[in-house]
Length: 106
Length: 106
DNA sequence: ATTGTATATACATTGACATGTATATACGTT
DNA sequence: AACGTATATACATGTCAATGTATATACAAT
Image 1: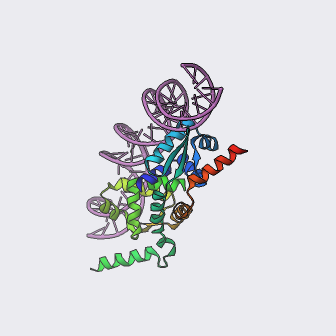
Image 2 (image 1 turned 90 degrees about the vertical axis):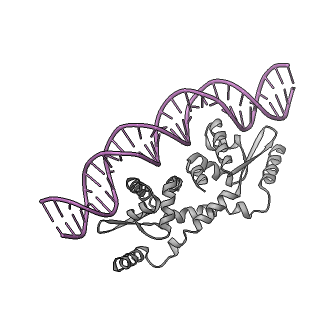
Image 3 (image 1 turned 120 degrees about the horizontal axis):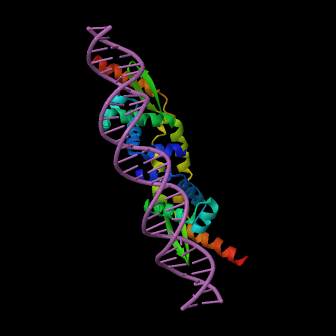
């Protein structure tokens, strides 16, 4: 999870991921779409690959990259667990002060 | 969104966030729970604060930090948009090859 | 075999950021 | 006012990772 976050935090890789969300793309297509140098795209793809976020398949000299579900699903679930934040009714600060008072009393 | 990811990518801040998910905490409580030096906790909290991910309220000398929903909700929605990855039936690679063939023909 | 196209790797340089440590500020208590 | 506790800031240092650039590999076509 840590690795996935770190990998996504880099803006170019974020862009690559958003592009691949549309569907698989070859390296050249990514280079053209994003205007990043080819070596850098390859390097970012390598990092994404090592993070398990993409896979590549060969078609002649082309390498077609596509997203892998796993890490995204994992983070999706993690962020879901924060939904208490915007669904919770009782203000957390009030709750904290209640606990605080309790400790003072004891 | 970029900022939120970058902020979360740092392991100590990730830990702080997980801790605050349990409820508001003072700086001292965070220091004790995570075993990070106080200046570093304060600094990480500052970064989290600037990212809009936490807010603090004062109780005497204490600063009580709590999570702010916004950025988490935003990322939750973003990751939701990837659910096509694990719900999609048609293999994306096949799809790509179909498009590829189409371009060759034209 | 030679050439062209597509992609990957290697390496040096730079910049950003986490960490360690010292110190400042804020507030309460006596 | 003086001291203790809680928290924030400042600054120097080291590390890691992104970038620029050159080059290597893989495959296809002629």
